[in-house]
Length: 330
Image (cartoon, rainbow, N blue to C red; front, side, top):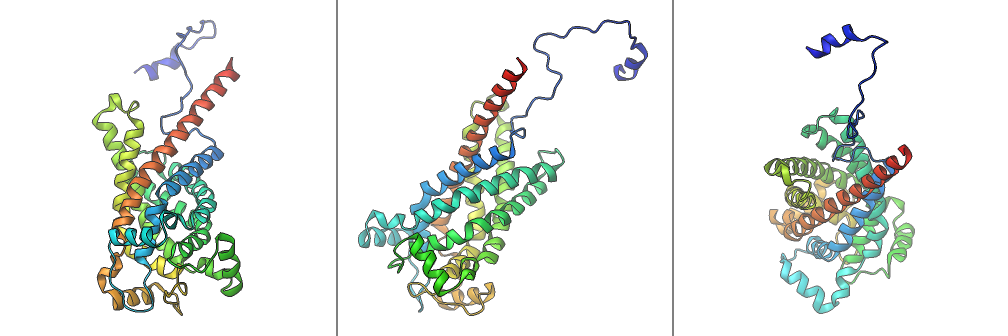
């Protein structure tokens, strides 16, 4: 073999063989953008998360209205009825109440989310791009970190989304919550959020990576030309599946975040079991799937927007890094 024979013929008086101009002995950065700086992952994630949540906010408002149970048994409300009620009683602006809170929380949370995911994916996978377990584990670690950043603003957002919300705005809600309920109220749903988002993220990232890889293998010659379509399609499939699987825990999260507001029940223990029992007693087991349709309608396009935006920003940074590297070389 050539590798075995090479040492025998290495002589100091032999001239080095010149390489052709297009020969690059160094390892080039792969299309997965693993060569980006940590801050670039954070910026890409922040932009992607902000665009995703701002674009899909009206659907999120409808979901919250459908999931928030009152203090007495209520009739299940469908997607069309919920939308019609908001438009009829509050106008289009009612769909955007609380968007300021999400604007403050989405950027930082997704910056943490994607940067931690990229670092953990590289660490856990050991360089194997087909390691589904590593993708799932990286996603779980990322969501635990990002939920710690997003949960307080998510609580404020959902309270503002309720019909007849008693709060004038983001800062009024924050001040009154601190004064009346204490700092702990901002994290009353954190445990439930993590328990929901851990399987959500595991399913989401595993599905995303698998669908993306499958689409690229179907037409590898055009994968680079249709990259945004691949990311959007894979993201939509991952978002829809993960949303459907975790809807019951999302209903519990909404109950905990909106408790005591606009007639919503207040839970003494705040345990997931107590909330689940209350939901089943009032609305039956179907109550656990409240808002599943707008939740899927939110997460499918939201994930498509988020992933395609994220990959587009990463591609921008990759080209920027390559130009900077070439300028330094010359």
